Image 1: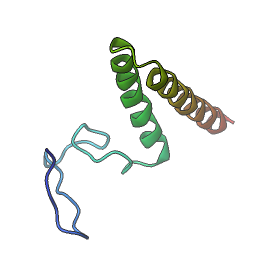
Image 2 (image 1 turned 135 degrees about the vertical axis):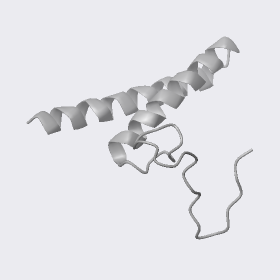
Image 3 (image 1 turned 90 degrees about the vertical axis):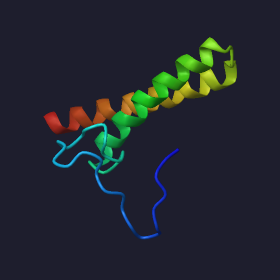
Length: 82
């Protein structure tokens, strides 16, 4: 289970001096691109789990979510190159 914090208080970083984008950082703290990359990674793992347990509708919906995240990242990368 996660750490319980008081409202309005941010949880302290688990490893002091950890580099940005580390596993100990809360998702989404590095901007939209990092959040989308995190979501895509997590959805891929959940999609495999859904497939393994023959949860067809969840597998499909997670696949659509993964496609959307990948497309978002592709378009952002393309815009940055322009």
